[in-house]
Length: 384
Image 1 (cartoon, rainbow, N blue to C red):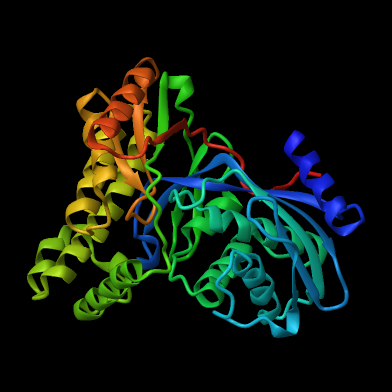
Image 2: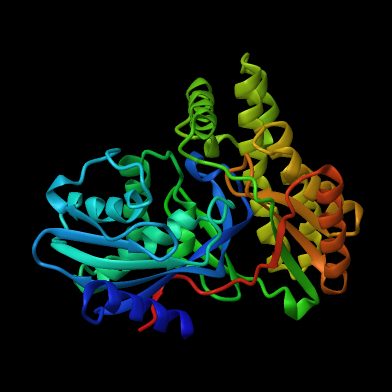
């Protein structure tokens, strides 16, 4: 409640009037299913308690005013008619892109005053940008009575990030922020956005899921992410399928034998095996065998490290240290090249594991990591 009160007070100080409301949208951790979302595959994120908050009021004069409590600088004032893709390289491109995407889709948004703050760690692979997009989209959907469903808001936010910001991300992050439920992981088919909420209450079973933010920054809009995506699309084209999701796991060896390009072969192998890992984790959780997902997470990390090649020394160190110190399983989460790893652990082992990871980082000369517990939390909502 304190955070809601602060964002409301800050809005009044900035804009001289009470906001029409305050909204929240969370960051996310992806339990399993990495780099599958832009291949029409399966993912399994859950929402974090860390979230973006937005105090927002309507305007009717074609002006968008934006301010962030977390970034130096005053209020940015933009004209809606001037919004155009890839013209803004500042943080404002994320909320402005949402307004642009709504208007492009024919929704009558005529302006807004927005004040934002976020507790989602930036650059940690926990979808801080998606949280910003979704909180703005939900606020405008409510204020302008647009009547859009959560999955439709997620699609518009993805379009904002892909086209307006220029980052070739998939649909998972925005859908997780918009649609997750407390105490559940979201099993999402990114082809048709079919969703299933899978109960995921680790505390009740004596377990914890730790997030280890390596503090190594990554940027999705840089070339490496785009190169992986292009390689996956090339693999699908060479195999004659719409997307790599259409390559059956049982036929993987035969499919790989048809590919001459070793790099494309590695990308295809990761995506097809990762989709199968998501389905395995769903089956284990639904059968009540939660501890058995640990080795599947670790297996997924090896695939991201060796086949997709998006890990880094700090992420590998988290995983190897955690597993050696008795974790049930561990893997990098998010797009890679830095960011965070997750560690599935018995509750009694949390302190030991945390200490082992911190000591390993110190011994390697790395910046001390940030370690916190990930609790499956509520998706985007109006909070006042």
